[in-house]
Image: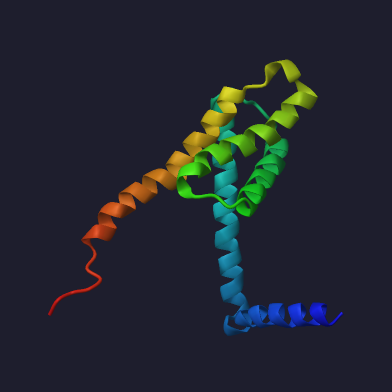
Length: 142
């Protein structure tokens, strides 16, 4: 029981950070985060449809949410993330096709949609960012 109280006390210390912000600040942050998440879900849905992995939007919303949750819990490094992301997407979206239309599993479409999403949202911005980071002068000589 004392271990539980100790852990609870430690967690409550992390929760104190919210007291530094107003409700409005926290609400705006939540709205921006939710908007970003919704945009990623819509992008994934559109890419799945583009690559012939046609799934109703409601089903897609739930599956993509689960995919993002699982991806957030799996520790990966940048170079392996594309493979893990494709595998997780194939697993969960494949379960939908197994149940509804087992003969039409568009595995290439699912992996391609996942890879294009990774490329557009992570790889390209990271590559573009490297050019700007090298131009920054962190340690200027006076």
